[in-house]
Image 1: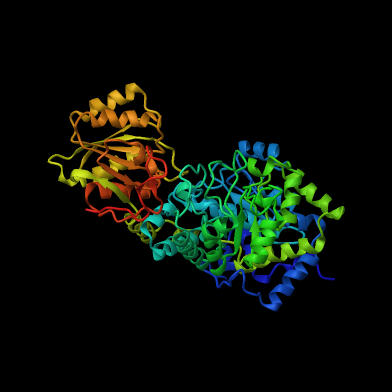
Image 2: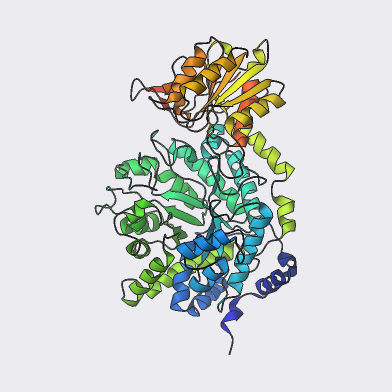
Length: 616
C-alpha cells in the first residue's frame, strides 16, 4: 500500500532532503531557480495534471482540506526558531510557537509575509524562512507545498525593502504611462521575489482612483482613467507571471471611489451598474484577459449589485454572479485580510469565512483568530451549509495555481539564487531610469525650476518625515538633501513634520535667510494643515520655494502662492532621488498627471486635468 506521502514529486522530495542537510535544494533537485513556464489561469490544465491534483485532494482529511483554504500570517524570521518575542506573539494570536507548528497543526495552504511580523529582515533570511516553511510542508503526513505571498506593490506598500530593488509605485508608473516600464518593473520585482521563495504577489492594484479623498487607495492606483489603468494592470500581470510568480489583481469589484478605509470601516460604493461597467470593470477584465492567477476581493458594499448590502467579499451576486459568471473568471479568488473591520463588522469572525466560501472565495486570508475560522468552516461542512464537492473545486483551483508556479517540482531556493538576482546593479539602475520618467512638474511660474539656474547653490530642504515602508530609506528631507548634495548643491535638511509647530516654522525661516531656495516636501495637505503655514512663511522671505508632493498629487490645490510644484507620488528613495534630479535640472520631468487635480476653492472645477505635466 502506498503512503500518502508519495504524492510529493521526486524532485521536491530530493529538494526537501537537501534542505534538511544544508545543501543547495534547487541544485539537489536538479531544478533551475528562475522563471518557469507558465499557463494562464483561464487556460485548461493538462488532463494528467488535473488528475494528479484530484488524486491529491482525495487523499486529504477534512482538516487538511479546510487548512488548505487558509493563508495565514506568522511572526518570526525563521520557520522553527524565531525570537522569543515572536514566539510569544504566535502563541497569543495563533496558539503555536512558529511557522512549522502552524503548518503541522492547521495544514494551512499559504503564508503571507509582513515586515511588522518580522518576516522580511533581508533577502537571505527571507529565502531561509521560505525554505523552512516548504520543508515543514514537505514533512507533513500528506506533503503539500505552501504558496508564500506578500504585498509588494512598490511605492508606499512594500513589505520587502532594500537591498531588494524598489520601484516606483502604481500612480508614479501611471504618470510615466509606459506599459513597457510597468511590465519591466513587475518582471524584475517578480524575479527577485521568486529568488526569495515568494511565489505570489498581491499586486497589481486594479482600482481606478476617481475619488481624491480616498484614504486607502490613492497612489496605490495607476490613476483615474479606466482604460489607462487597464493597460498598466495587464502589463504588470504579464511581468509578474512571466517571472514565475502569481499576480493578484485587487480589490474586486473596485475600491477606487470611497472615502472610507475598509481597514477601519465598511465603505459603500454607490456606482450604478453602468458606472461600474465603465469605471471599475476595465482593469479587472484586462487582468483576466492577461491570464491572471488570482483576484482579491474588497470589503466594500455595492448596493447596485447586492441589495443585502453585504460586503463584496461575502456577496455571492458579486463574486459568483459577476466575477465568475459574467466575467468568466475561473482562477483563484482570495479575500482581502479577514482581520479588517470592513468584513468583521456585520457578521463576526466565525461567520465571515463561511459566508466568503459560499460567495465564491477560494482562499481565506489572515483571519484574526485561525482556530475560530478553521472550526467554523469545518462545522459548516459537517452541518451541510458548505458542500465537500464545492470545497474540492476550490482546492483544485488552489493546487493548480501552485503547480503552475512550480511548487510541486521546485519549492525551494538558495542563497546563490538570491545573490544572482536580488538588488543587483542592473536592476537598481533600471529602477532609477524608470523613476526618472515618473516625476511630474505641475507648475513652474517664472522659471523657478530647475534650480541649476540659481546664481548660488545653497538649498534648504524642509517638510515631512513620513516613515517609508520598511527598508526603503528616508526620511524624505534627508534623501532629497543628500541627492541634491551629490549633484553639486550645498543642501541642508530640516525635518518639520506633518504638523510643523511655530517654533519649527521659525527655524525654517531663519535657516532660509542665508540660502538661495527652499524645497518643501508636503504630504496630503488639507485646508487646515500647518504645512500651509510653513509654506506661507517661507514664501514671505521672497526666496524661491519649490513644493514637492510626496504622496497624493493634490496638495498644490491647497497652496496659494506656490510658483513651482512637482509630484513624486511616494516618499520612497527611488522616487525622491528622481524628483531631486528633476529639481536640480539633471533630468527633465516628463511625467503626466494620471488623475485630475481639482480646485479647492471651487469644488468640481479642474485645476490640472489628467495628462497635465510641464517640462523644462
